[in-house]
Length: 76
Image (cartoon, rainbow, N blue to C red; front, side, top):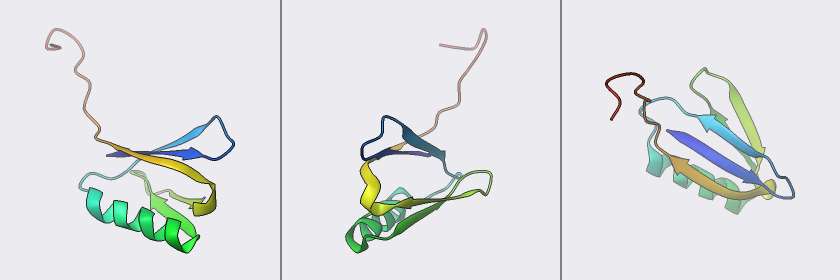
């Protein structure tokens, strides 16, 4: 799963690829709690890197599922 976070007053977005099996509902609740408490939202990506995002700077959050790209003759 990937999470895309828009930052207030910035043209850039944070795209973070989360580990497989990440629970979308639990992550959504964690984002909501960070926004309500005006604290840092800590996320750990697929490679184990931790990213902290100040909740006050979050403009929007988008959850997407990653799909493997099929390349070659098997592509439909």
